[in-house]
Amino acid sequence: TYKCKVAETAALLSMADILRYFTDAAEALDYLGRPIHRANDQTVRIQHRDVKPGNLLVQGDAVKVADFGLAMALGNVIEPDSGSMTVAYAPPEFFRSQTSLTSDQYSLGISYCQLRTGQLPFQGNTSEIINGHLRGIPDLTELTPEERPVVLRALSKDPFDRWNGCVKFIGELRKATADLVPLEADPDRDAHTHTAPTLFQGRQVNTGQLVVGHQSTGMSPTRTEVSAQIA
Image (cartoon, rainbow, N blue to C red):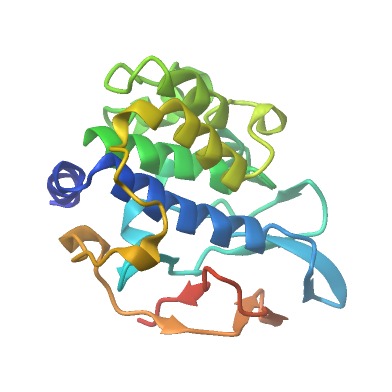
């Protein structure tokens, strides 16, 4: 099952791997969230809206964000959305049919918990998970005391209480986990060669255009390329 694959992948990843992979994902998501994209003849920011381990794909030694099927262009800080989501990773605002500029950060935080510990911070049946996102306290007991406040802020119920960007979030995690990463571990992925864990493997195609609501949004290449998964 998907949960079993996540648990198996979590067991294979070192702390250095997780930080490197999540830094890549954070850079890509923050790039999407910059007000530099054009859609419907206006400047917009983009939220992926389906960040989860299955959409963070390893190619070589880098992670690429994939599957933009739920991506949404935002002209304001919070916008109404279609209501589509992956419940286990969905921020509270999704259940109010809203998307915020920090929605992807929340989902990245859920994904971090799952790949760091092998389990989700909100568990149970669908109703229980939804209630957890809306009102519950995430179970972060498997994280170190230093990690918990960093992740807890990313998982704030109020979108405005989260970190100022995904890169900032992962940067704070780097500080909090400094003692867990061997001194010889080089954060520069170019110095390493890794085999992608099974969960992360997939087929993706690099793209310079992201289609949002049938409008093409031009994207320039960055260090972390943004990719779209082709069915």
